Amino acid sequence: MSKQFDVVVIGGGPGGYIAAIRAAQLGQNVACIDEWKNAKGGPAPGGTCTNVGCIPSKALLQSSEHFEHAGKHFGEHGIKVAGLELDLPTMLGRKDQVVKQNNDGILYLLKKNKVSFFHGRGSFVAAKDGGYEINVKGAADETLLATHVIVATGSNARALPNAPFDEENILSNDGALRIGGVPKKLGLIGSGVIGLEMGSVWRRLGAEVTILEGLPTFLGAVDDQIAKEAKKAFDKQGLKIELGVKVGDIKIGKKGKGSVVSIAYSNAKGEAQTLDVDKLIVSIGRVPNTIGLNAEAVGLKLDERGAIVVDDDCKTNLANVWAVGDVVRGPMLAHKAEEEGVAVAERIAGQHGHVNFNTVPWVIYTSPEIAWVGQTEQQLKAAGRGYKAGTFPFMANGRARALGDTTGMVKFLADDTTDEILGVHIVGPMASELISEAVVAMEFKASSEDIARICHAHPSLSEATKEAALAVEKRTLNF
Ligand code: FAD
Ligand code: NAI
Image (cartoon, rainbow, N blue to C red):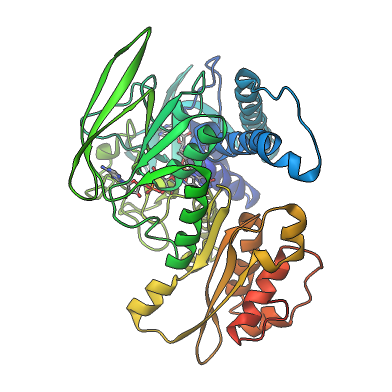
């Protein structure tokens, strides 16, 4: 007889496993199916984020930043380093351990919350008795019966049509996180979030990095002033970013015992160019993943991009079938997936789950970090919205000086009549942590004056946030 569940979640990434835990907390009998395998073929829940995304990339960003600091910046602090050497296998091994700790942690959390975990591929079989039959194919082959289904099957890296990923020469985010030796020359296509983060990792470890970007503007979704400041810093670091290129043929040839990847492209002036690199990372966005889900068996509707069609509440076209995370519209971010997962679990339990898409923060974990929430200055201009802007540079912040990292600024945008905060943009040290204050403020519909009147610890980077809020009324105290 099939096992019966109130909720079956397909996919155990941040969208899926968090939805499963929240549903179980609310008293539902829950199953979570995930097919990701670790190197030994065992379960590795956590999805893209834990296995080949957020977590391993941040582990390598941290390690490579330590390496760069030891080599280039310890001297400024009066610390002499002799015989500095990179031990890449240890660095990659540490990253794998960090991933494993997260996989194990998620398995523990599922167990603690009495979620039944199934390792294998979940697919729709048919609608049955007002619910759905879901097959799990893995070590075992069994069929579950679900009253509600939450699909959280994530996304995959988008390949260039003429250059499929082989993870040896042409790398997706997966291969980019486990290059066995530092390439002398590394090419990346796409200067978005992955391009900048992975480009930074390998540049810090010694690669000569060139990023080819199709658009003429750098980080078009980021506030212009912040993007310009970030670009200046990346140029200074030697991260070569060519904008407005058109990528043509990509060929893999032989070079000694290894290989060379040749990328033909035209530059912004339309001139034909060739870039030869040892490895190429293609980071041109991601596509929603419904491979093997058998969506057609039950008539689950997908859009032209392959994303599952959902309404604002993550309801699909089918009764009691929900979808969350990268497989649906909206930003492909782990915390967005988690928020949707929680909201759906609460809706299933008859509560009023809610996700505020206006306050989903973005972070790019480069150095300097880039973080923002709400609207950019160019968006406000385009919408004809009256606003006031205030900025404060880290150069004038005591803690930033003590840290030895004074790049960048905090920028506030507030409504010009009500003073409500409309957007906060940060480029600089620990922007990923500083942005939380702005998110909280915007959730509470705070004004810039509210932040300006709050006592911030001294010396702290957060004082730059307060000062940027003061700058909205042109009354900074330390600049
Ligand atoms: P996923 O994490 O992709 O999980 C989907 C899971 O479902 C996978 O385990 C998959 O194996 C499983 N699955 C799929 N189909 C089936 C099936 N039929 N049956 C069973 N299992 C199935 N976001 C951030 O917010 N911060 C970051 O710092 C960040 N860094 C990133 C770095 C990189 C290099 C990449 C690639 C992404 C990064 N992201 C980051 C994005 C983040 O990883 C995704 O937004 C997030 O993982 C989406 O969660 P999800 O649950 O929707 O899907
Ligand atoms: P992206 O959307 O951030 O950037 C892709 C870039 O490639 C864009 O600048 C685009 O203009 C460019 N591009 C597209 N096609 C091209 C072509 N043919 N030639 C040259 N350039 C081209 O996508 P990316 O970097 O692949 O990351 C995917 C997603 O993963 C991100 O959008 C984000 O949602 C998530 N992510 C989040 C992170 C974070 O939160 N820190 C870190 C890494 C990924």
